Structures are given as structure tokens and as C-alpha cells.
Image 1 (cartoon, helix red, strand yellow):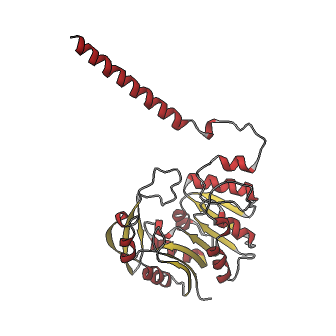
Image 2 (cartoon, rainbow, N blue to C red):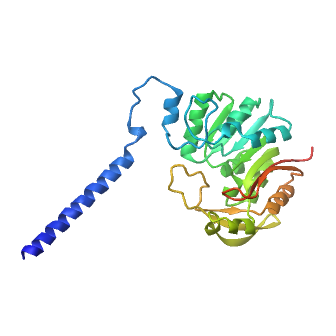
Image 3 (cartoon, helix red, strand yellow):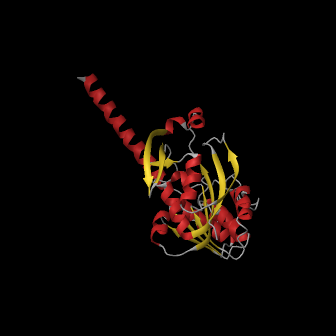
Length: 287
């Protein structure tokens, strides 16, 4: 009987400890920068530190500490702007501004207005911080799904910048079609599916599953289903769904032509990128 009571007591203590640990974990998850007050004078770094440890991009000023990727000085975007004849005085639609790096570049290069649509709440808040830090007074950041924006907005733009978004789509060809209805010029940077290269990539191989035959307004192609593995991460920057559909390289080019983009230029192609083969392209409609 004594041993039995000891065992019950041990179990009760263990259960109590587990409950206490769970409460501590829950409390610590809730307690963060949102529950604290800054006790230093106002600064740009304070604003950036709201998302300390979550930034991907580094700011133009070396005095500001954020991420490591040079997205505020992206050579691919510089090339795209040049290929499209510049953005001075132009209206630009940017899809998925992420942390505002490309928005900053577009304003710096003279765009008259930039409308940037971001669905990820954390990314949207970072964009607002970048807007204040860098005085992006010609950029309007909108919080919402850019597919819904494109489907229902009647506004047109001179140029569309869509960097790092096509491969996150459920309906990538529809996105290209919607872009073509809103702008006569487009810059894309995207990953694409290549069976050999993706199967050789240990990061990518387990993420691809089915191949789906698809048809969008008479354009036949294949969707290669990609499954996200990191949606719970605070730094997650994928699409809104649990999966996305990747296109083959040629399918992207053919889809661009199908929706009316004819003058296509390609650069910055990386076959062995750690997250999959990718390229940048510009495309324009005939005048």
C-alpha cells in the first residue's frame, strides 16, 4: 500500500510539473516585443527590432541591423528596370513586396507611384516599418491577397513587378493572365520545375508529389505540386496555401506568350539554386 501511494504521489507531482511547464511555455510564447515598452529614445533600429531575428533583408544603411540578404540592392531588379526602359514617372504594381526592398529600389529609380500588395501580415508590418525608415512616400502598401486585388480592381499600371511569387501560386497561369490585364510590361523572378534538377536536390525532392494536368482558358500545362514544410516558422515567406503549383521553364514562357507578352528577355538563371532552378525575365506586350 505504501508503494502504491508513493507511486500515486509521484504521478501527481509529474502531472503538476508538466502542467507548470506547459503554462510557462504558453506564457513565454505570449510574452514578446508586443508586450513590452521601449525604454530608449525613438530610433529606426527600435522599429526594426520589433521583428528582431525575423528579417531576411539588410537595410541600405550599415548602421541598421536586420537581415543578411541584399534585397534593397537587388541586381536582378536593377536589370529588370533597365530592360523595361526604366521606371521614371511610371506607375508600378508590385506583387508580394515582402520586406519593402524592391519597393525602395523602384522609388529610388524614379517611379511616380508604387502600389504594393502583401498578404502575409508579418511581411506587411515589416513593409510599413521600411516605409517609415526609408521615407517611401510614393509607395502605397496594401494588406491583402493580390490575386483577389487583380481579379476585382479595374486600375491599370505601366509595369508590374512580381518577384518571388509565381511559384507560390495555386493558379500560376491565371496570375500571368491577370497581370497582362493590368500592365503591358512585367518583371518576374521565379523558381521553376525541372525533374532532373529537383530530384537531385535533397531539400526539394521530398516536397514534390503529384503532377496535375491543367487547362486555363485553352492553355494546357502541368502543375507540379509543392508542399510547404515550414508554415509554422515566423520567417515563413511562402504562399497562403499548404501547397503551391510549380511550372516547368518552358511552360512559363509559353504562358507569358499565351496571355499576350511577346518580347521576353531572360537573365540571372541559376540551375543549382539551393531552393530550385530559377530565372529572371522581363516581358512586354506589343504596342
